[in-house]
Length: 587
Ligand code: DGT
Ligand code: CA
Ligand code: CA
Ligand code: ZN
Image (cartoon, rainbow, N blue to C red; front, side, top):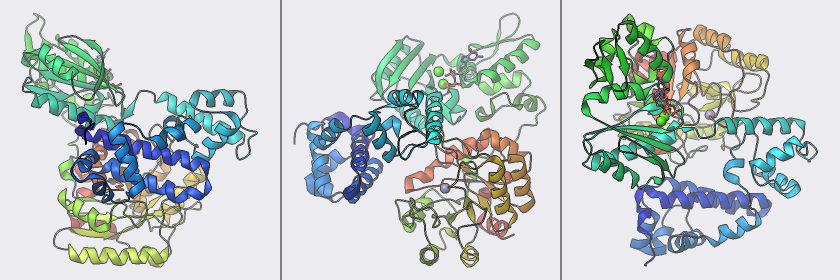
């Protein structure tokens, strides 16, 4: 078994690559439509399993051969052959054959709002559209509206989708950038050549998308640090290499700025490079007013003598400001509050005691109730709420009344089994239908410990109709939590339109809680919406919307978003202990 390229061993890059190829094969099979439905599903399922498993497939193959691979759930003999072929040759014939037939840029096209595999197929076979550029051309020459299944509306939709896609160019999700930055930091720290390595920039501020990764390092061997950094496995190229600043190109798509500093000005550099620029400009004006000068090198008095620099908090203190948490540094009024010592004490990840939104195999999740329960226990959660989809969500295999009852029975069973270790709450993510009613009958809703309701369909309603729809649901007095209230997908789908003031006021009047959904491409409500909702004295629930056990860790992105919206512990219901949250949800 030679030919096993050893550099795959890191970070499961091989697993991810194979998952990508399987997914694309499934895309192309789907184009051919019909008979192959079963195979399409098999490839998609295999992609999920392989893309998320801990063990490296080449490791499994090395130890136990093809049989070992076939022990992975969802991997039969055919798929195992594909994996072996790729491990040995770095190629997959089936993929290449399909790709020859369909030279289409799926990765980009599938990201467009309003685009699915059916549409991609028609656009390719009728108009030869292979990528976004081709699509732009056929839109501007109005060739799309005459195709069957399309129309002027879909032409406008696609055009909007392209704009959204292009305006996001180069900005990546926090959920992709933060783990990458952490992996680089970890390796730098382990190298023995750095005294300190920290993340700065928009990632440190937990902004929902980021333009690049900023890392600051203390070291007295800057050249060595830059050498180590340039040779990291994540790096695909070098943009500029210097001893104080190096910019690297990473294969995941972002660039990474690394700056090496001395200990005595590290705090000043952190203050400067955490940003935001708008925050910095204002802080610097305060320095000037006091007769000081603030730069990335330190805070200096009028004689040029350094009065702070090593420690960030000291810089704020010398300027007469309370320490401002990075998530608040956007010049949205935080500096004025800091002057008066009135900054809110922000909610922390450690404050979280439960998670009220998650899916299992009962609808579109990948794990069982018990697996999710154990994973939540290992994160130290005191309680969790299960919220599989209701029947209107066909694509997500939503539950009808009969299935939801079996679901509740199983939840009761698992609840008994783990009762002294973790508390289980029964719920379901219940569709808020077009008329504002809920997707389950009264009897089913009454069996729930709380009702989580979300808008998933008819997203294009007018602002007026959508407002009516949500208000009706709130005023009916049954719903407890509104899930991902705007239903936007970052870089992919615009938020639904409704009158936020009216909805927030009604939510306040009815004790309805707004979710902050932690899923990396949702982060919904977003920071600005939260700031607005906060003015109505609303309560929030920060949930993961997990679809597999590892998603439970997405909580930190919801926390980051909540902190960007200035939330304190007392405004977040799932910081409450079990007894109190049950009371609140029943009240
Ligand atoms: P990004 O990368 O677009 O997601 O956003 P940032 O905030 O990470 O921006 P970046 O990487 O260009 O710069 C990092 C920080 O450095 C930025 O937040 C503030 C500081 N900075 C950069 N350029 C300037 C500038 O021209 N003036 C001031 N005051 N600060 C700057
Ligand atoms: Ca940055
Ligand atoms: Ca930067
Ligand atoms: Zn949902």
